[in-house]
View 1: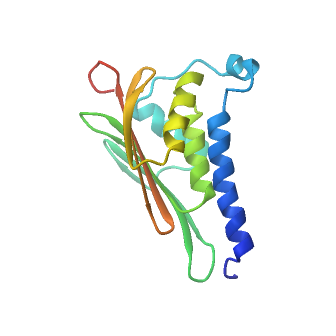
View 2: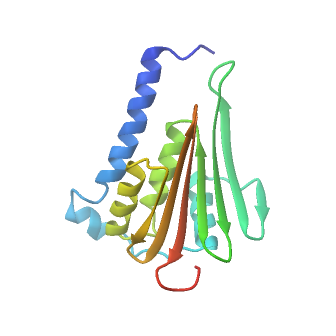
Length: 172
């Protein structure tokens, strides 16, 4: 266990920037990539939970009727704990996916979700663009969805909330 050096910090920062750049470029460089993408699945609570179970290879440690929490963490140094938490919550108004992350691994979870089976290539590109702005709060129509994105950074932790409603229809 060693203290993170400046070089390691720069690599971690570069890694975060790289994951964001990858998210922005997904599907934009190749027609073949768009053609190979499967038909999008309905974005709902059960499909979202199943996606994270499969992607993370974990059962959620806490399950409630309309809220599921996935958690992963490890000690990076003697004094720094890296963790990522994903909450999938279904309310009467929306489906909210919340990511609480402290490192590039958590940023990759966001990237995988946005590039996942719920969104068309165009929707993925729009969501990636919203996430790249790092504004505190944005909302707008993204393809089939009314989306609100909230982004908060406090010291080493980032919280990203993606809230989805079906555009012009009742909640998902």
